[in-house]
Image (cartoon, rainbow, N blue to C red):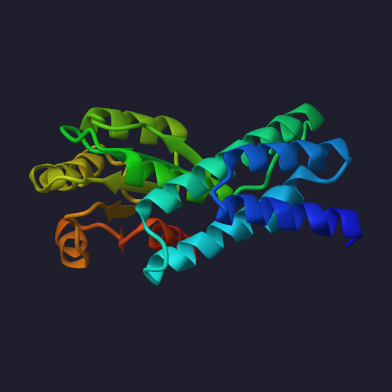
Length: 217
């Protein structure tokens, strides 16, 4: 690896762990202007920064606001890289398709947004349906998009039963068999995931990425 590329990759990594979206955008722009592979910028710079922040979050060394800012920095850089990839006509290799959304009756989206960002950075093709997503929408989008993973977020105790409702609707509509389901959210537990027939529980954004990778093995 040449010195210039190594320096820019380090700056991309630093822009994420220093929570600096403007720096991420600036360095990503410089990276592609120098003719370097945008995929390397994503995988060897930005992803490493997010992995570092995810590790700190798991150890209690940083908190949700920092994780949100790190995700925003990552998104700024990735936007530059993906524009270049599109211009070059390259198709970024993906690990698989994921649909994610917060269930009906729940308007919370911050945690879900971080998970969606981190999954995208880690090589998944993500369709984020947003918050307060009707059960029927999950079913229809799964029929259309044919993902390998469905992520269901619930941040309210009162909307947790909707996760179960979605899983039952998938079974009723014959779109459950080839699908792995990951659930998460503040009140959600490992026990609840097992009770409703989900395949995995993501305790936080970093854990959700780990579990998603495991589900595809």
